[in-house]
Length: 298
Length: 298
Image 1 (cartoon, chains in turn purple, green):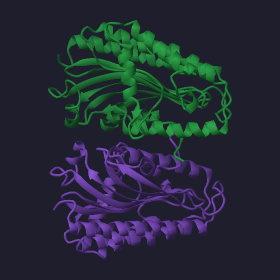
Image 2 (image 1 turned 180 degrees about the vertical axis):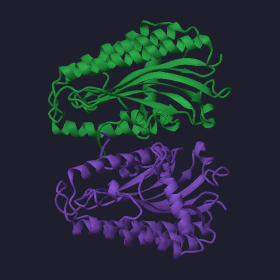
Image 3 (image 1 turned 90 degrees about the vertical axis):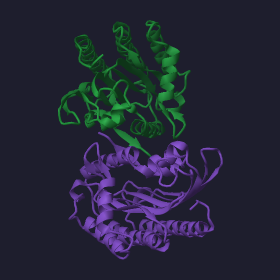
Image 4 (image 1 turned 135 degrees about the vertical axis):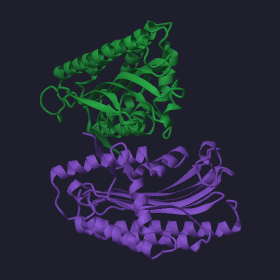
């Protein structure tokens, strides 16, 4: 299978269309949370709105390589949220080709996806991450996942109502696609992936992580990938709603900023997407929009 | 040459003694700057003092592997400064042995050094880093350097008085050891090393960086390494003194916090010492004490 057959052209167009549609729906959902409020005392006035910015990528060889739309919100509920869709293509640099399935024979690739990271102002509300993508080399596959990062130690356990609700939603998403998805497997993969080895501590309470769901046949992994987006859209807003009006102490705010430092450590030391993006000429502004707005290493 | 010959025992003891002595002298010099003040408005009251903490390392195989003394100050001139000395030994894990000169034949190593990073409160005063070390595998060598990171764009150029003074000091240090050191080479090495590839921007205004100065004969590279420490002790305090009483605007304080984010990006994405330490069971608290205390990614 080469990266540019006609069959793939249709599949790539369908996946791209879904990711771009999902970006718009996520933006609408987050702006609705901004409308609902309440405003955090230190936040700017009025409900926040995403600012969209198109970017274009140049392949490492200097050829056009696609691009995307980054959308960043600085609001009154979310101190910072980024929701990005991108579709990039070209040839992997030789040092990467050997690391990517199917690319060592032929370095051409195509990748499309949507990614979201949101940092609420209120330390009671958990930080969240969601990403789904389709990648085509001489192989083609879907990957993605969603995970929750409560920032207060008292909320970072599996019995917390947020963790229970988030895991239940992701379990249901997996169980609706039994031929493709395994919740125990994808939950363990998430725990293994979002782990800060140098501190031997988890990034958050987990969620699901999946990769290399091959697209032959196409519909089952694509349907599951759409399900992850739909499930996320349903699952996260109620978690925000249940926490966002709670008062927070100065000590909790300080704890939040330290925990955000761990988030930075994970993203810059371990996150494959971040490192891959930075090393393959991705858009630095959208890749690093994942970093929390205010952080401390006291 | 094996890592534990008698000749090396003497040399290792001498180097270690120097690094530990230098740590104490650096601590005294920074506490003197704390005494001199003035206090930054948001800082804690009174001149800061370093808090020393011993740590012990376990080799990856579970054997004792040395340790060190971390010393961290949270003061009224320096929002955070770390000055650490450590002496570690053991065997490199197989995945590292191939990357370290002289370790692929025999994975045993010994390393001793001193490192310093200081983040002043006042954005007019530049952040600074200094590190010197001796490493022994089947080879033995010195490495290190010092570099300056002004945090205000208006001060980040080679004609700035701080840059002129710092480079002049490091040039003199190199020129005093002509058989060992080359200022043009070590300055270029510094510029190349402290470069944020993903942003195509330098970390600061540079300084010197050197590595693999082999210890046969021992005295010339050791003398140069001592010189770097002595030169740093002479060069940095006057730079602080000339800046520390200047007023700063809110915009300059905001710029400082963004620039500190770049410092975090460099240390977690590129810095060999940081990545090496985190992956070889180094002391996380002392390694990451390099990270600035307050940071923004707006």
